[in-house]
Length: 484
Image 1 (cartoon, rainbow, N blue to C red):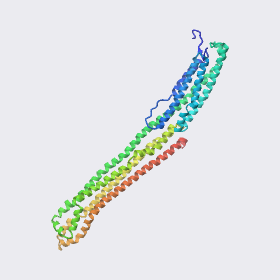
Image 2 (cartoon, rainbow, N blue to C red):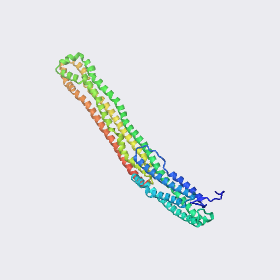
Image 3 (cartoon, helix red, strand yellow):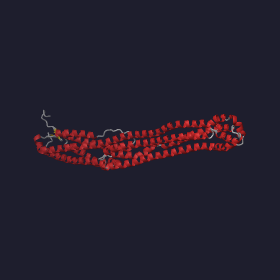
Image 4 (spheres, one colour):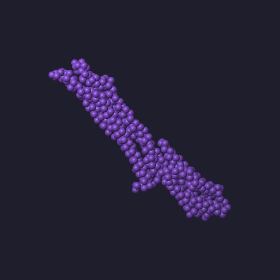
């Protein structure tokens, strides 16, 4: 155009207005800044619906502001490069500015209400502040556009044509006026990074919350699995201790049938014929019959089998318990982050690691419950062996005493008469003592089950109490920050 000597088209007329090229440059740069405001497409992996709700609201706000803002910058570029019609290009720019103003004032009301309901006022306060600054700039921009339009219109009327010489247009559109217009465009451009910051910050908080929540859910499931595995380990350690005791009961009680009686073989005829000793023999035969010995020994194992079946129910639905008790502290800590208040990241990083500690402490407490009872059960197995030895002691010297009776001067009949009452008492007590062994085992395993239940309940209570303290601390941190 300079080579051919024709005027450059600026602001709706065929005239070179000083600064018009710079206006185009600033408008183009501002357009790029609006492009930065458009939200990144963050991916969420958890099922926390609040994150999705906020993502939609924030993305909508960013997209609408960026879209309407780019309409303004494109209109400004068109205006600065246009030959007219003068009224149309100025009106087109003013319309775009008005649309952005409307969007900022009322067009985002639904999205902002959603944000307010989800996380409170912090994000909206930032958006309000950023919007107030931009609205003020847009008002000044509207005024500058009106002033520029009036000056150019006056120049056209005075000149009688939209093709105006440079020296003429300078008398109507002064360097001061163009400089003021460019200054407003710079203000327009510099108002936008704050919007970019707000949108980027809040969306990053959503992504961070989603990432941490996903990780925590995995850890919670692992913690529940670890706690449940404690039972498997407990059972694995206890069952091998039961079997040897059952075998010990069986073997020692069988010593009557296969140890003591064969040794008494030479005297059995006399014992059966003696009215004092026959009841003793009959009662011992009943107490230590094959079926009876098998029943007593197997019942010992059945008591522990029943015990283990009851113990496994104590940590049923542990994953649901973790979910119910940790839901509120998790929600509170995530809330302080996604609300994007002044202490959002500080409070989040201060208290989020505490959630892992809550989980691990509970799992460790559960493990402790099993370990303590495992040690106590080892004592029961030792006591059971000692009780069996005492029962066997009741008959293991009977053969020796019977043999001695045959060498007494008074004869074995008188001797049988003297020892029969003591042995009869022992024989009559054999079955009750065997039952005492089982009753003691039942009593101890029941006590163990109750202790373990109480231990688990204490661990759960500690988790509930710690969770409540954590919720309170997070809320104080959100309002007071490091001073909480």
